[in-house]
Amino acid sequence: MILIKNGRVMDPRSGRDEVTDLVISEGKICCIGAAEEAQCCGVTYDRVIDAAGKVVAPGLIDVHIHFRDPGVTHKEDIVTGANAAKRGGYTTVVLMANTKPVVDNEETLAYVLEKGKTTGINVLQDCCITKGMAGKELVDMKALREAGAAGFTDDGLPIMDTKVTLEAMKMAKELGVVLSYHEEDPALIDKAGVNQGKVSEELGFPGASRAAEDVMVARDCALALQTGARVNIQHISSRVAVEQVRLAKRLGGDVWAEASPHHFTLTEEAVKLYGVNAKMNPPLRTEEDRQAIIEALKDDTIEIIATDHAPHTEEEKGVGLLNAPSGITGLETALALGITSLVKEGHLSLMHLLDKLTNKPAMMYGLDSDSIEEGRAADLVIFDPEELWTVTDNFASKAKNSPFIGWELQGKVKFTICGGEVVYEDK
Image (cartoon, rainbow, N blue to C red; front, side, top):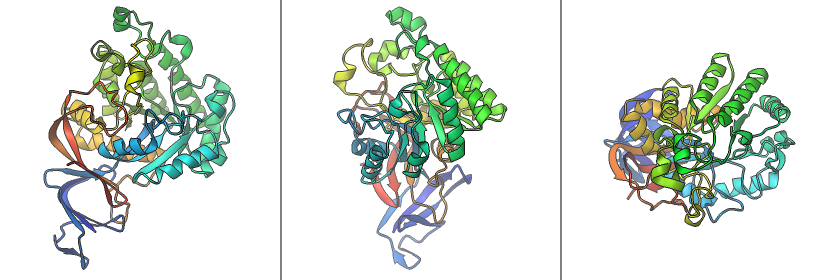
């Protein structure tokens, strides 16, 4: 048994916000409230954690993760990725399907799920929407769902065939699962990774236009309204796309959206400072776009914060801005960036931020691991919301591709607990 005493227990689902104690037994929360340090229910504690001055919250949930396993494990693998997640306070992650081979079959899905069970956290897997991520033919969504697929996505590539997209939404509605979409029309991208605009012109980089995202979001919001399917717009970056999601929600669509910490923290100007570590798809855009994302987080047009954790090696990133792959690591800095960029700046309350990192992701996927209640799984994060720390390249991830190295951030994860076991402790 574990006693967590004197912590500020914050649970977005129930609204609980109080300084109290928690007792964990047999992997579950068995008691909430003042507890004697020596004994509860007649059993001596195996461990006592004094959480005075710290927040005790549901374990964080990230619905957009790349662990590169199978096939690209020189960048990351399921074990090292899970270690990064633990260090960031995450107890549940949803992996994307663009591995090698892609996760469009039951055998590869089983491999990921079985390896995930060895990590100490909850590793879920989205399967591809289309076979081979070719955008032409749907996978057997029903069979893959029955085999354990959490949802479906061709993340990394847009699905350009509108008929295929429509059929996928019809099937997803029937199965009651979420479809997550990467929204960039390649016909409107001269070169991916940097916003087409002032900075790309200064750097002589061809760039990716905002319209490439906008036209795809408009189409998929319209199809979601027609079919009633649950659709997640991934890593939204454009103010116009934000408005399209806002309209679709107002019209009754089951449309969700996620924002990544880099998109609410940085703008295209970061490319001049951080080079390849500020190159991503969709790209960092203008201050106007960043402010639109923040406003949408405030009014819940964007319900979810997801990292799009995308590890690459130093060698891969070291080939120059034009040819380097897009993406950055994100799991180990996400909570602190949320506190630093959103809470400290007065945009969100701490409870509202936690809602976007726990409750709302769980709701979108229909997960149970999202609240602090007696009898529920003890998936928790304990963090100091005031502690300042400097980001170094000493990540638990294999990768170091982050523009935030050297930044001083506020909010430090002290413990991550999953299934009642301490899986990470800051020492």
